[in-house]
Image (cartoon, rainbow, N blue to C red; front, side):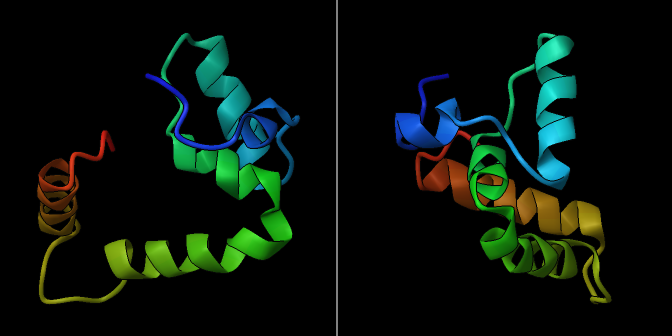
Length: 83
């Protein structure tokens, strides 16, 4: 997958909670969701976005988390977004 963000973001050593997840996925040869690089670039600034996303996707809702994931995947595909 081609980088979506600035090389400075993906090239900087990751920090915060996402750093360990990025390193684990790389070690297993798995593709890293590129938004994780943004979260790891400035964790103090992006933590609220990660918390918001978790709340929307996993918090109380009449829709099951799997259905919310399916809606997000469908929307991403319609927007030509790879994730």
